[in-house]
Length: 389
Image (cartoon, rainbow, N blue to C red; front, side, top):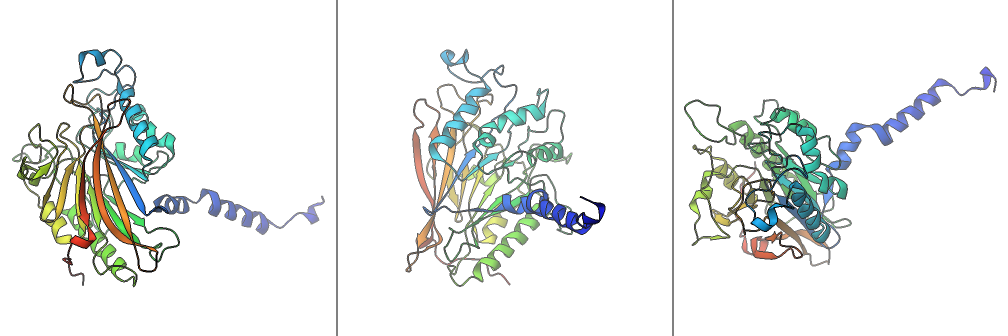
């Protein structure tokens, strides 16, 4: 081809721009990753994995297991448990609620994280994570840990929201919007809102001992996000005239967890509630928001109860990891949360009808299901809601 017959540079430029938009544009990839929705069966299933404390893999010994289990037990037991839960129960989203890696004597935290999340990254399904109080105790800061997590395959995790106009405390504060079922009137609306917060590690105030807490800047972000989502949802003619329900995930339990005992909870409380020594008021903030129906935490591995207070269920995940402390003879466990849509008069999938949860034990060859609970039902919820200006 002669020089005179070559295509003009503008054509090459157009092709490069098209390739960028279709395949390389990071904003487009992020938007695509963000879209999660209810399936054609009207259910959105979440698997909560709490306190893996992942370390070296096969060479890591298990803690608090029966003598006959010790020889063959390692971090790989944690991986296989999570893998089986994904394979059998097919969650739409997996949520890791902190202390994902052991931290304290972890030599290579990046390698440990890659192994810790392997079961979900290889499955190719969406997942999200928050940090616990141990994740940063190796050579990476909390920001460094979260920066690596957001680069892993199929994650919806975020370091922090953009464009707030103020600094927000912690790393891993973000929300996810779960859209309605495809081809339904609410297909483009968030009918379930998921909030993820960094509950910190340890107090940085000399006069306040103990664990960290959810700070005012995080609560402000939560309030603003909840208000915005409620306004968007309530503007939809097909929506029920009450907020779309919300679920919160963080690591360290709130002081309100101490208000439950055998008389007002489902599950067990086998160790003290390791909450912050002060009450930062986040539970009150959630109640005032009017949309959060349940909050799920980790941290205390052999507590797995749910209790209801002021219209919100507070739930432990129960320890999943084998390199985390536990209780010999008390199976490691994970929690499943099923959110179901109602069917409208026209036969379409509509708003969220119920939120239910149950626990599954790692008791091969079974994954025994125990203690199912209805956390929320629209027909019994009444019309209490925050008035959004």
